Amino acid sequence: MTVQITRDGKHALQITTPVMPAAGTFGYGDAYRKLIKYEKLGAIVTNPVTYESWSPARGTRLVPLDSGMLLHTGLPNPGLSRVLRAYRDFWSTLPVPLILHLVATSPEHVRKSASRIDEEESIAAIELGLPDDISAKDAALFTRDAKRRSEKPLLVRLPLLDAPEIAEPVADAGADALVIAAPPRGTARDPLSGRLVSGRVYGPLVKPMVLRLVGHLVRRLGDDIPVIGAGGIHTTQDARDFLEAGARAVQTDTVTWIQPQYLERISRDLGGWIVTRATGAFPDEWHPGMGDTEWAARNAPAPDKAEDAKKP
Image (cartoon, rainbow, N blue to C red; front, side, top):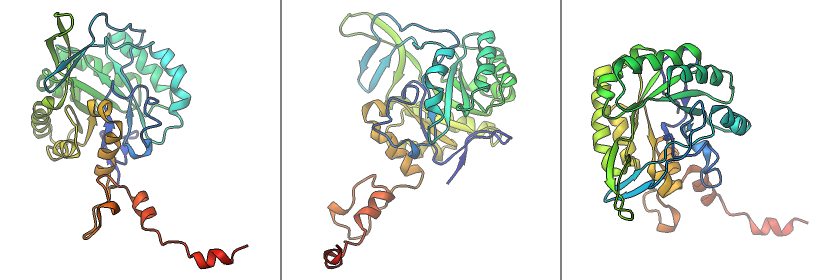
């Protein structure tokens, strides 16, 4: 099974299962290598990277919500050059494509970053993260600047509230895929300090809003550009809902923090690597999420003890 998640072209990006972690939830690809079988994912999207280094946000960074959480990190990272030096060798060993999430901070920085990333063989594609409250004109400008400086496929992640207005201008400017959408912003009171804190909202409550928007944009844009759904995906059915709405692939976020192995399970399920329980199977012969390899091992014929006894 292969899924093409970008427009047709010389460098079109194809993956083996339509599931990947969202930017900001998987580190730079090394955070979960002892917990997840990377080869079962479609691709890996890095933490957000800026051209210059950014420091972490001060004060409260996480506020629990009734159905999720509000997170404000400030997108800390050491800057593009240091990230490349630290991780390019590791990325070259990955069994799946690596997509670097680049934060659009200024046209100049986007141009310089795209040119630099274009030289890196270990990076399969760029995901450009646009700022909130961006105009359609500026969104198209960032997209064109990145596209002109790199031949790598360009995915553009749109802010949730601005997506209806900027999706078509970004597509017309050359984006190879649209990621719908960046987590919405909100404000909540920190129960410890008593202060109001602004940040991005994560959790299952985000899914209905994003799912509706994905369906709307897929109907409006048609087959002109692939759409990748992202927001509130916590179960296999959540992911399938996005595909049914027309998304070409999905990105998961907080489920990776809650239970990392569930990201792999969703990916294996949508990739066709989950075994269906056989009729009449006993409870100890199957469990949800069982893969082909485990099923084959459990059902392998037992070795002939008599033959083994004859061996010297």
